Image (cartoon, rainbow, N blue to C red; front, side, top):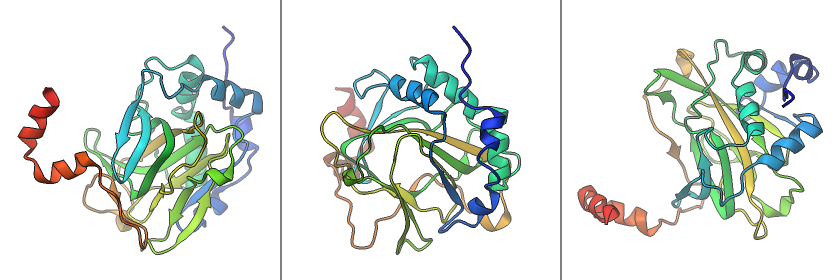
Length: 264
């Protein structure tokens, strides 16, 4: 098999110096890069993306995060996707991110903890949140998200845009459609409220597909530090999450009883 390279230093350099644009973006540092991969390489990636019925997915079902599929393992993935994941976790892309974001000493995550492949089914959504801020096993601070969308012929009327909100969760400042071959990179800290909270309104047989990469550092600026936490969700103004039956049971049924029921 001929070796395939999705990314090269020359290709990344062709985007120019993005540092000022990235670091000055509102409501928090971010950037949107369209046509990120060369078209023929993106087409290979899109064609190889696993279908919703592949045996690799974990399904989220809750009021905050519903009808979302996630795969965090490279086992069983097509070679095209494994090759891409190797490159975005490699030195060429990491150096590109460091120069653009101004964050030195970025550490990629080949284990895909929380990242990997994400796919939302019709009706799926992900509420506004800030991400977990500390990797307990590695003792590293989470600093950066990079998301490549893999949605061909996307129709904006289907909704489910990525929303970036202000620090007080009062206003959506950026609404980003998940067009295919669009890369979105953004800082993650205590003020980086984001999500795709509007339910996906695509036809049956279509989904919202992405590849998510997370990057860490050993320490972070003093003004960004906070107590360790998992993902924190917030409702938009006037919004109320509808709890699933499982969520309501968790509030009233002792954990030991729930565990016993799941075993039977």
